[in-house]
Length: 309
Image (spheres, rainbow, N blue to C red):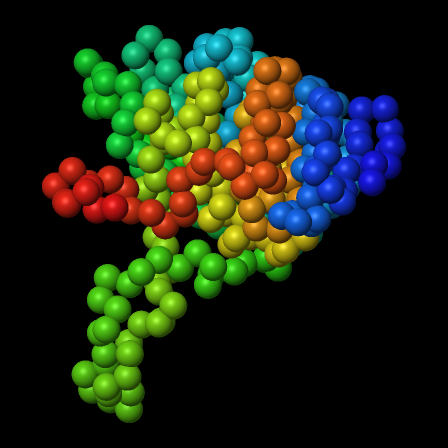
């Protein structure tokens, strides 16, 4: 069944195997996914201004760092921050009262000196009334090798909420305890397990491989999100059927992560080739052929047999 919604969008509910022509903006496969994915090749301010207020339970994104990557133009730092402020204001407007914003950034570099972008963006979020819950460090093992300073191997995810009443689920993102069989050795609970049998709360340092050439999710995008990073945020900060937004969606990792866990995914990008790849990845997910790195898979350790896998 296909229902026309407006010129640039279709809502598609697959009742049988149908080869739908591009462009597709909403997908819904009754067999694999009862949710929708909205993708538009469009400026994010235009896209955001077309969305109703307080719609999205989670906004998660990695904006350009103003360092001259293929998908961005380098601009004066003040201009970059003002453009970010405009997007952030709109993201706050469309954020659900119990929602979260996760803004993932690295460093701006100039003449060999670095400027941590999350520090510069912090006042923007605070002035809009948001509260910082965690400054998450994403650690990865590979990247550019520096000559005159230490090689950077982390970026940050600032998790902001709109209020103290925010959606939060710990159990789906618990990680194995270091000592799972540890028990209380004295007191009224002597002999009982001292930790949660479901695992422990992850710390604010997350180790996920970044998407390089040997990563199963690699596309042409030079700075691609690993899906498992977004999965953790989706599971912890949203409920099933909630809406998740990425205003710099790139090749669609955020939308895929949302669909994998029965959420609705929305995103936009100004580069048509990236949106085409995102559509293909979603189609591959719906068909069961998308290759991803499973959430919770240990990071490869060459000192262990088979790398610990």
